[in-house]
Image (cartoon, rainbow, N blue to C red; front, top):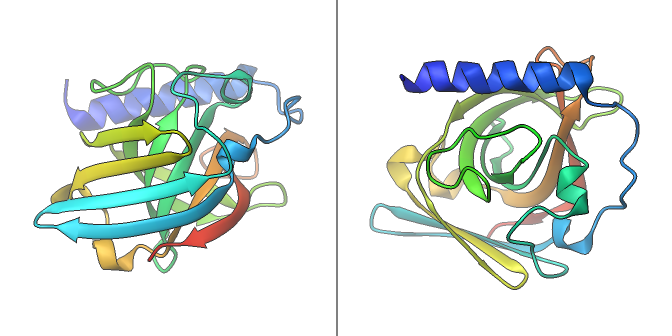
Length: 186
């Protein structure tokens, strides 16, 4: 299947979930592993190394917070363009990655302006690149070919935890809520 077809099917699944997922507030409070305290970026040859350290150990498999949101993750963002690289985990949404479909995996995406209940809206899911995802305690690191990034490593401003849930005010129907203040990437 072509990549655009797979991404289109993924977005169709999101819309189906949006129609059935409750828009009520999450019943589980935001865990400290969703709050990014520190972020870094570097490049070695053609490999980008993106890292985020959070307030507690990051679960390798879905916990109750992950199961209470359509998508949960950590994003490294270029604030000038709204382009992001994200490590996500989303068992409610279902499989959309060949590399790690039931656990943490990577997407690139584009964001649009927010709404009364969301910091941003999903404009598009742009790709599902292969990347190395390493979780060690409270740190997550991505090793990804720079050709698969939506922006150059130097353009990445910082990292933040986020969730994606239905938002009827977003053109895509999907709103992004950030968890905590973004950490600058040095």
